[in-house]
Length: 92
Image (cartoon, rainbow, N blue to C red; front, side, top):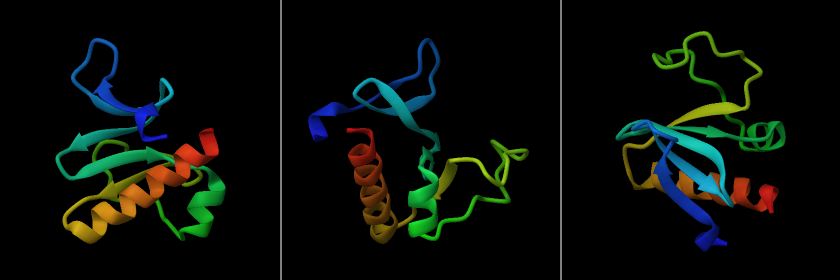
């Protein structure tokens, strides 16, 4: 499954995105913020909330499937890996 995950730029931009089997499901806004598209089920089960302080998407709907995840330490990275694996399992 990990071989189906690719990191590349989006079309002709410098936006770094994460793809699973060619479908974008996340993109980086900075070195420490990843915007990831999750199902409502994952959002509910993981008890995630949408960032209300988003500078990139200040008008994002409170029902959006896109969640900004901040990465500052090893625990944050572990949580992100867990979320990525959940997304990939749903997309299979």
